[in-house]
Image (cartoon, rainbow, N blue to C red; front, top):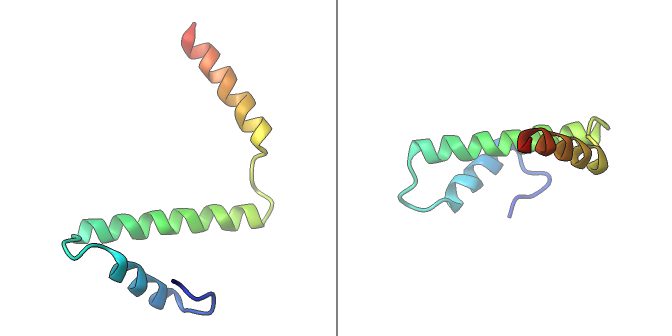
Length: 69
C-alpha cells in the first residue's frame, strides 16, 4: 500500500503498521534491513549492474560439481 510519491519515512511507518502487534524492535530492524537490501539490488539492476541468469546458473553448476566431488 505504499505510494510511489510517499517519502521514505512514510513508507517505513506503513511497513511498521503492517507488522503484527507483538513485533519486537528486532523484528522492525530486520524488516528495515531486508527492505534496504532489496532496494540496493533494485538500484543496481536499474544501473545495469545485474548478473544475467545464465551466468548465475553456470556458476552455480560449477560450484555444485566441485562440492559433490
